[in-house]
Image (cartoon, rainbow, N blue to C red; front, side, top):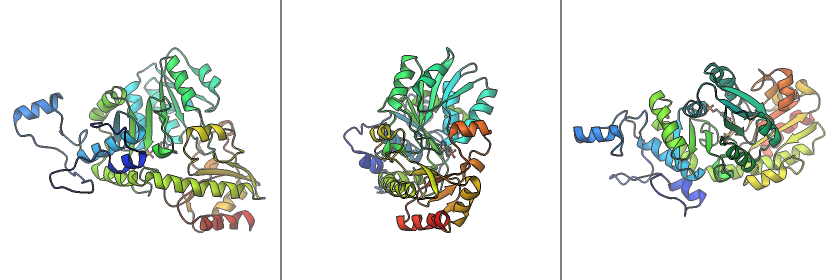
Length: 394
Ligand SMILES: *Cc1c(COP(=O)(O)O)cnc(C)c1O
């Protein structure tokens, strides 16, 4: 960060942080579509390359539009450094490659994004990095899984799809008592609802593809943290490996960030109303939503998050057959596994996002055959409710 944004509220950071107006006096952030930058002299080029002088060099690792997004997201998360990446998976890869070496070990919450599981179990394992999985909300499970070679605790909260909530401050205290790094994937809450760094986490991961964009347009990601781990180590990996965010995508995400706090509030309001309504339905066995008093970590979520977020899942009576019937009865909701969009999406985790899990793994993760996940969008609540009602009642 080139400035301190300490005095600015979240909404102001979301709208104004990071933009250094050019001589043209533009009001909206410009898109710099240039692969390289020119220098005034050979000496200036040498100084930039050696790092003695700040400034742009080449858009694999320096671009003003991308830098504006990085500075804005860092300000919102309360981190000193942010590295924007080509996708959320690239953000997780860059973090692992920068901070881990062969022989190291990760302790991760069990119900993480499915592709993160594949990255850890297949590709990180191939590089000699192993992973143990634990129950997100069970601190003694985390503690018991730590080995002498553990380097990272990796958590995603709330979890997908059953919205289990992990105690970030407690995990940070555990990590730091053992000299470990706590990484939190903050995709579901975004900095508008949860600031993991303020709770003690060392690194925040984002899939910008989801709520940061918020309108389902671009794929991107980010790593936020301090100037050493992120500003030097993760940045160093990006510079060499080129998992770079494009300036155009950075600009789309910048525009997304400006309304993030409003959208997250509206997603949460629609989701809470839907969760409360679903709880009343005869055809519904159980509803998972951190904003419900029936949620096992209701109080933790109320303390740790500004609101409960946009993801609701529920179990219908009658297993897969009934779940598919509810999904196929909708006319407006989008049947897709994506989330964080203005458009409400509906999915059957057991046969899609979590279809690769074994029966035991599904059971441990709470992925029942009757489970349906809704990423609640910003349409009129009555229309979302009516669309679900036909399959639940009819
Ligand atoms: C989508 C997602 C990712 C991966 O992000 P991509 O942008 O699709 O690569 C990581 N974590 C969570 C929680 C996600 O939902």
